[in-house]
Every structure is written in C-alpha cells, then in structure tokens.
Image: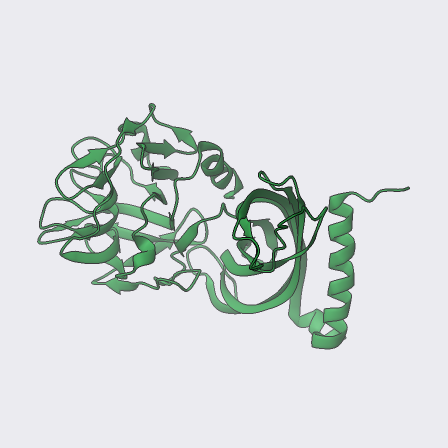
Length: 383
C-alpha cells in the first residue's frame, strides 16, 4: 500500500480546507486578490499533554508527546503607506486559515493518539512584527483502544501559534512555542498580552524603538509596564524570558522584569542586574536565591535572549539558548504572599522604584521550567 508522508498529508488537508474556506467565506474574487497579500507558512511542533478520559470507569491519564505539523495560509491587507521598524503600520487586518495534525504514543498505555485541527482566525497586527493566535486541535479515536479501561480523549488541545510578518506584509515564518506559555508581551506599540490573558498598561513615559522583532520597549530609567495581579503569573515553577539590549552595564539593580515585591527587598521572581551583570532569582519570603551570572557579554549593544527558569530543584539562566554554568540548587517554594502583587516589565515596584536602562522585547512567562532545548528552539526560531 502506498503511504503518504505526514507533511504531504497536512498539505493536502490545507489545500482542501483553504479551497472550501475561500469559496464559502471570502470568495475567490479578483478584488480580494488585489487588496490582500497572501503567503503560506509551515512549521513543525512538539507538545507534551496528559490525555485523560471522561469515562466514569477510568480516571487515569496517559502522558503523551505529540509531534506534528501546522500549515497556515496568511492573508494580510495591503497598505499603500510604507511600513518600517521605526514607523510600523498598526492595526492591519489579517486572516489566517490553518490546519494542523499531530500524533504521539501514550507513555502509560502504548496507545497511538492522533489530533487534527483546522479553522479560520481574524485579527489585526503591526507590520513588521508578529501575530499570535490560539489554535485548537481535537483528538480522533485512538488506535488501538486498550482494555479494560481505555482512555478515549474528548478534550481539545489548545496551542499558541505565531507568525512573523515583514514590512511588506508577507508571513516569513511560523512557530508553535513550547507548552505552558502564560503571557507574551510583544511590545508592538502597546503593552497588550498577545494571549489576551494579562494585558498591561504603560506607566509614565514609555518609549518604543525598533526591536528584535517589530518594536520593543525602550526604558531610560523611566517608564515601565504593569500587569496583573494574576494567579497565572504566579506558578510554582516558572520560566521568565525576554530579549534585552544595552551598550555597557546598565547599572546596579536594574530590573528587566519582576513579579510582586516585598518592601525594598525582593520580588517573587525577577531578571535583574544586581551588582554584577544579569541574574535570575526567586524569593521564598525570607531568602532570595540567584542563578549564575550572565557575564558582561550580555551588554554588548546587541540583542540577547535571556531566560531564567526554576523547576523546584534548581535556578538556571540561559543566554541565547545556552545555559550559564550549571544552575543553583534550590528546593524552597516561591513566595507570592508579598504586599505588592503586580507584574512589571522594566521595573521593580515595592516600596522603592528600581528601573531599567535599556531596551526590552518579546517578554514571555511560562508556568513551567523550559528545558535547554526548548529555549534554544525559541532562540533559533526568532528572525
């Protein structure tokens, strides 16, 4: 029997869905073709999920790593005015038709799971810049069904998918970030969360400059972004990530980001300069524990991706996808019972104000500690 590759199967599904959607929703009119720039992007992804069954005869879960492909037809409304990193075009309408398929084998049962999804997404974006959306996949009946208490999943999977968009309105790349992403502040001329979970507000005078992707927050020891308070930004295990840039040491106790604050002592977790270069720390209410220091190379005037993680066993720091040192062993829980509860970008705001001198872009919080390979994949996927 002739077999069809996973990528070809996804392409066929996309072609069928695109044709149907165009005919039913948009129409294949010449006017639309003239007013919208169309491109197709594709990406592979991996997502760890715990499959559960609604069956009353079984309350078990089956951990599974799904590997799959997502393809998207992207239509962005054409603009006659120039769009540049310095002066991006904002609120540009975008339509996305995506299709995704993933398979994986359950670690507990050996069951082969398959999930598929296809839908249309409408929104607005800044170009150049990025656009994120929630992509849903639904399990299909597993094979084989394992007796006596089979896990037959019905709950959908939700993935965060993103595209990068050029100044000309072309989708240049797509990606699916690792699971556990809670919030993503893209800094595209505002403080909105791309996932619409923890939209922020701009405090004082906050500027924007050409960023690592699209635009970036620019702070010169004034201005900040505030979000929350939100329990979603207070996970037991965490990854805090951002692109940063400054030429030369920004200064002591400059905060890239912070969650909450205890007087003028410490945040629950934070990326900051301290008295060295850059570290990530967590605070248990009495003691704060820091990762190894990034070293002076992080402040060479270029963009660098910095990520701090805590998994309940160690605090780690990564720069451009590479771990610094081998982590700091810690088992203390992060304390979120602090008087100040908000999340801040570019500042610590307890009873004292500690700001940041430099540029910050693409701030992300995950509710788990990402692995080194996952952080490397985000670094490599950023244009």
